[in-house]
Length: 272
Image (cartoon, rainbow, N blue to C red; front, side, top):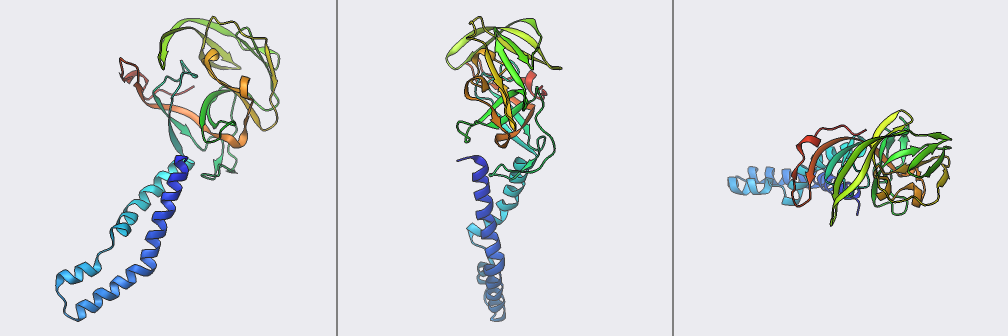
């Protein structure tokens, strides 16, 4: 079950319990306390009559906390953890990131329906979205193609609307993923129509050049680890309704390899 739905259910349940208590149970308790006080009952009996049940007490305490967390996650920022190497070297396995939820417009929580249009994804943005093949799973990739764009990818080169996106060699990059250690890839800097970013390329030959036209209201996305990314080249484009937000900050990073530990140099790094 999606965490947003769990939060929403918790919010509704605690809110209803609190509201029911204020409307019906609290007045009953007050009348019982008044009656006991007028009858000259012992202090212990009066205090016992005044006490809320544990369920009401916890609901009253947690409702405002859940409400704040729910609203912040729904409309401001949401945290995510990077589980795979498809965005290496930009995002490492074990990076904990923040995603701007209002960059692309305000959406109704749980339903994910846009209610206020603020902006649209731009080429080069690192975007979180719900995977079209299974909307309960969140993916993160870089926006390559906008609605109407013509995309060609072949021989490790990317062409957008007939224009080559230049690449500059930048040495090698070594990383681990799962049980694979010491994976060596070529690191290059790609100029994605003015957005310069790092990406990884292997020596594995590409299949026949791939060619795509991005439909209206859809976005073409790719991982920065080009030869180890499950992206729009294989499963298609991302509908606008599946967008979650724009990744903008690494707030924590933990190396899950055998040498593990906090990656202090990645904390606070902006994502671009």
